[in-house]
Image (cartoon, rainbow, N blue to C red; front, side, top):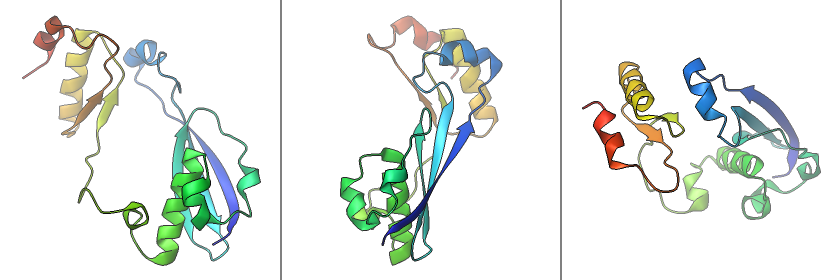
Length: 152
């Protein structure tokens, strides 16, 4: 299962204007790269990484099956798991071990925000149908006065 081609697809994740000032503390600044790995047998897999696109051309010609353990680029390694799983007609989790979940919820996400903006964003997320809100807490945790701003 030789890697024939790797395409890098830069994505610009546009942020809501009211969140932009806070999201600048995020390491990737809304930049996400999708990596598409094509194997010689035609199987295609996708993986993602944050930040600017890396030159991964040196991985073309590598064995994707061996790369599941040895490729140290997270986006390409993820794409190899996807492509190898498709080539073998097995779910990617079988290449890693036992299945842990039947499904994974799709979450609304923000970085740490002031309490009033967090409350506003939880309402927005719920209104869009999200049932999970993933947020970042910074060192020191969440001060107890923040929880009073969260809608119930």
